Image (cartoon, one colour):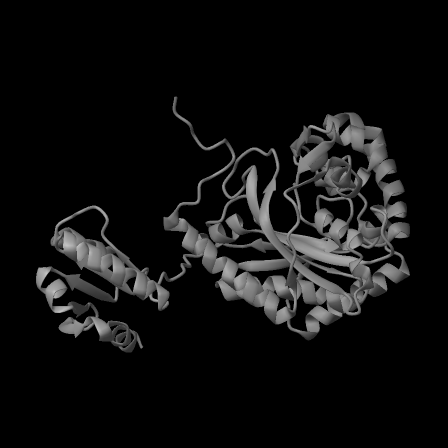
Length: 423
């Protein structure tokens, strides 16, 4: 019987994984600059956590979650997104009591959603996200957005745009909700079953429908921005002013609602504008979620965050023709010509690695020519050649592949000589 990778997942092979490592290095570097610390949460959580926070009318909860009963007859779900687990940890571990607020966190890891596979969209995907929890200052909204933009800048993306909206506070959303119900009710039968069920529960979700997005009712639906109260308007204006102060350009989109129920006030997406990227242009999305900590039993702790797909970042780089440079895989490759040389080479290999030198050797008993070809493929800077004479004389032949020189080096001086040539 043959086995294949599950549908909607992928193997990231060594020929590609180094690109992921480059991206991950950029992410860690930017987070360190902004003073965001890593948090790692379990891959599965109680199902109710996502039902209560993400929203029981969202596509994620109703259609896409991987949910199972454990042996204790408890409903568990593979995490479909990262914010709810982070806020759960924030509450459970009483981070609200930390002397330094807001608490600035970042996470990275696999998420799981049962979606139709498309370019850059998988059922298991890797998500990076940041969360700043504990402050209602509009400046922290601008900081979080700035961090996202800095990641894309350092990765080399240029064809991107920031789209911004305000979802307002609870009072604003309630007023907008009533307007949406009045707008959609007379013709709700023309919309899909999901939209019909959302009319009373959460009509804002209708605007996020993938099936009826082109329906005329969507274009004429009441805009949330028309229902923002004065406090929400002032807050949004402050966010925009902070962004302008650090020269971050944005577009306003009153139809941007995001797909999760916990969002309020600031909502944003960063999109690719590259012609070769594809139909789904969103690279990153996030927003403010005041009230989420209280929803899961914690104290008031307003927060804001975002999440980005690593897969989609790599696709965007490819669409713009950007590429990371892969450095040499090896510093030293050891070529051995007989059994005694192989034994000596193995000892030299261990000494090199203990000294912090990236080194490898042949384990397939191949001829010298084939071993030299391996050294070329690995782009090794130095090749050590060991034969019968080198074993007897306690030396090695050291070949500098960059300069094309070769010299005999005594075993006792080998490490120092290699480090000298690597400088």
